[in-house]
Length: 312
Image 1 (tube, rainbow, N blue to C red):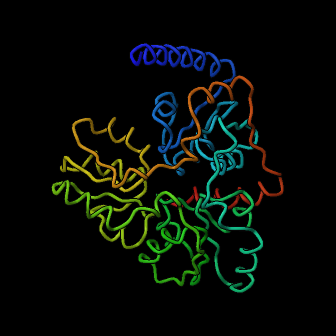
Image 2 (image 1 turned 90 degrees about the vertical axis):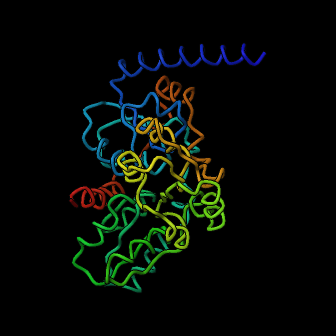
Image 3 (image 1 turned 60 degrees about the horizontal axis):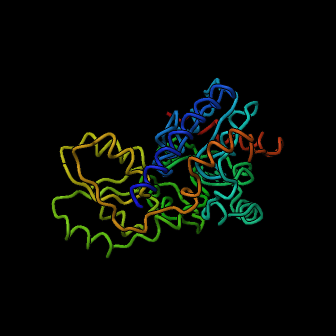
């Protein structure tokens, strides 16, 4: 029975992939997939990447339709950077708890209390928050963005863990919002120590969205893209991975001879995993759900994203 079910699943996936290729051609569509997506989504994507790379691709593409396989704020960023494109996502329920931890009224109040501060917002935020922002950043370029600013005071929104990490690379005063990534924040020192005991020859690579005491244990700290690159180029053959488990797809693809152990089985973002191949095909068939950003919000938010893309 299991073998029959597997055979049916494989046949269904084959048919879905064929339909997807047909729809992409008909719609002149491009599929962008975040590294935290299911393997079946990453496998069919035109580009896989972290928030920074995918934001660049959205700004550069000649496609008429952008299918963003990620969470809602990523689709918003694509629409802001490519306002004349149609941007759709496979499932409108794919949200981000961290993005929901900051609100416009609270940010405006903080800005009023610190009128000389520059607002730096992690790209993991809503369009409304980006519109209240001077410049955005990602985990890949956060340190460069902070160091590029001619200011003594920074309001950092919304991830306190990434903010703590970035603060170690600057003398600027940082007022840090109390948000966090539910998935990365649950990784503990105990989890890492237990895995190190099981795999003593493995290096620990960790995302700066994790807690400061966990980040401190890292043999390498970096964005998802930086972690993948490091593991590929390192002479080490075994790694304990401290980021979302979808990253395993690209890690295994780039480094097939190496071993990867995720630091805990709970490094899974349920919002990222809500997308699947069936929903991807359906959204291209129906061209829904479509991402809309009010023009007045988009215009202000676009400036903060464009300033980020200019930082080298």
